[in-house]
Image (cartoon, rainbow, N blue to C red; front, side, top):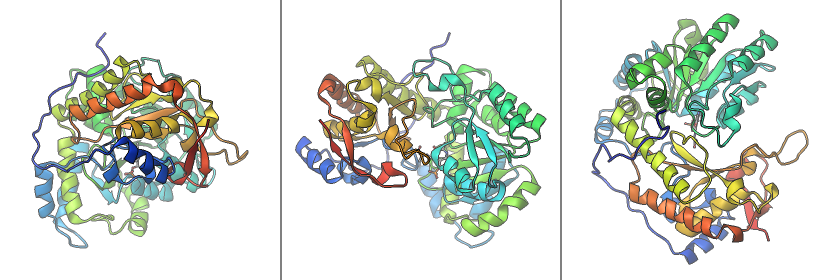
Length: 459
Ligand code: F0G
């Protein structure tokens, strides 16, 4: 069988503009992290050396995108920048209708406001937090019907983001009349940036057709998903062809263009039917802005049109995913437990296995994030019990199956040497892991507590 991970390749670009970053001393970082209450969200980016907090909106735009910005038409209505953007969406994704939004969650807001009512159920593959929050905000339930392999860190399943079609069909039967749409996220961020196969999407489509329910896709990382499909399922197809085949299965898509469309801000909702467009358009005007700008400047639409095109470039994708996988290989070679197969945009460290002497209530992933910063100025993000929050019914901490630290790699931003530094940093922490202390809440905030709470080290 083909190895699942992609090789490290030379960059398919050269560097034209640079942004200075600064290394701090261990002593400085001790003070900075203490001032931040042991929460890396409270650090200033100037005090971070390699920032792997997210891959969203933090990538580098190309010279072609920067040139396109200057051509932005800032007219309130009917801007030529909108026409250019619409043309790119029609040509690359095949949707006749597109509504720009300020970012991915703007598109989710509009879609959920128009289609989700109290008591509705939206089945899908481990919905992203903002999607789940928008569904719940409307009184709906985000029902997870991902395959069981997704929650097994050592499973080598090539498409861990897949939907369990039997679970989906059962949910469609059980909640008949209460399912406004099914939502599949490609790749699936929540389970580790794992891809969804074309065969699985076709089965999901068939289940939706049988139940007469529309299929929506969250396509934030659809280009990465397309490359995985090429490598693991359809080597005879081109990435653009796969992306198009993916879109052809959907009635509508939401997109955070801050990922695979290589922009710092932007998103959209693209739709196939005029009836659906008529239903959602009033909410887009209400929440995002007039239909030809949707909370963005004309120049942002220009950058997004170019970014969509560049995002599907096969060399760019092979380099990007190869770079992420190189980071995974480096960590594994140092003995560090990581989720496999490696995801498209990030490597997830198994913090519970890294720090087995800590109890779940000592938040091992949060403690590891703090250590990575202290050791090498590397910023990662906790995806564990802190992020999971408390159960609203019992008030107790929720302890998810996996206690993870995500190292997300921004697009076209860091070099191999930066990622080597990340590996060395993680290795140094690994070598002194038995001495790493846990953390406890110093001040716990009620909503989305991982962003704003403060912590103290425990013995
Ligand atoms: N869907 C997925 C799969 C995402 O990963 C994100 C954002 C969104 C929707 C929301 O898009 O941020 O443009 O409003 N993910 C970022 C992350 C924040 O760090 O993974 P947005």
